[in-house]
Length: 175
Length: 208
Image 1 (cartoon, rainbow over the protein chains, first blue to last red):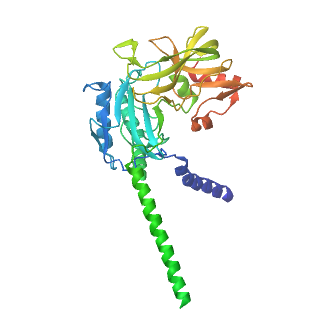
Image 2: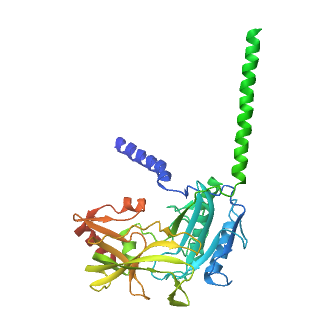
Image 3: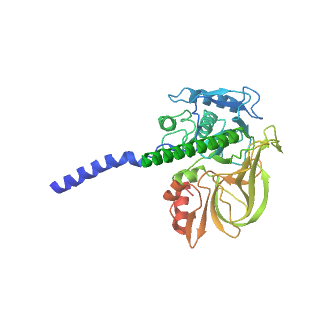
């Protein structure tokens, strides 16, 4: 009986100690902005020249979301920026967005982030904003995460649409 | 005295050698920085945001259709990026390449599918006229003659079937269902399983 109690106590203690290690946190891309992320710029791509569209508004919200985080991240508009924010329309895909990053060695040189206006769920509350925030996260240098994070592909996009603590930890760890 | 002179000369030679080396190297560096022909090797990588399902129940629920089918070959490739105002037209600036495969349907586990269908897999993207073509991070490709279990959605626009997210397809190999994906965490979740047991699990998950 006494031995049984010890075994239970041991198992519970072990579970408590191991549990935090089982939760996988942020993942950083192998490349990053050598001069930091305080002076990041963007310009609008060919399909987002007009303000007020669903995807442009989603990006504007996502930019504010990232700029409001307790991180060094600060995005500002520049018509001559090498980073482009755009939308595309692909109905034959479950993809919400894509971000292509151009790098040299471990340095990010520029990125193009786009949200899929043709995704059947994109009109649902906050989904486009969540997708835009996710793609900006890639542009900053974050990879996919399995934690509660905007960088988690398995997230509920109607509920997780702003950078989470895990995302913030990732950015602050890198920059 | 002789020793002292020798030491001073030796140190002097070493010092001058260092100065010459420093000036020479500095000159080269300036030239490199000033040159417009400096080669800087760049690469472009593509990340995408797609639904990921970590259990068979969610995967089954999200799929419009689940079927077992054999790939008969590539039907063609096309630009999936369309003009939102007229989907009959391609996006003039963006290219998202989809590969259409001819698939012979053997058994339907959920939903409805004809005996022969087209299954589309996204392969690569070119996000602007001056951008490079980049292969999708998830792209694997389907093998002709291979039988798979597909978890798909049906396009209202084209009638083709496309990936529900990840996982998308499992290969049937030696009476085992084997997940084909580049997502390492999903390979840990969906271990190879006997075909009959896997189908039963899917049918139970979708309630059919």
